[in-house]
Length: 128
Image (cartoon, helix red, strand yellow):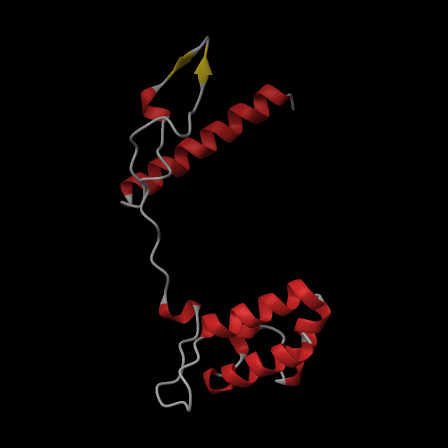
């Protein structure tokens, strides 16, 4: 398959996706941020999408654990995520994985909200 054919196929797929998202109300088609085909220097206005003004999809509550209502401290998931990320950047990914394994999990979303403060504390100790 030639490069031109691949580009044409991808362009067609993008147009379909844009049409589907536009009809679902998730994206507005306004300016010239993304262009479809450019044929002999001409751009087609129907193929232009403004990503900056596109609506962002709403996240589901199940996508991210929420902190427990009655914990000793007001530590959020974001606080714990920041601590794990900081540890991974300073001491390495293996150090962050080791801290999470102490809580019997492989990834932060599996940590119980009441354990967030302990995760932060363990990250701080491991980073020193």
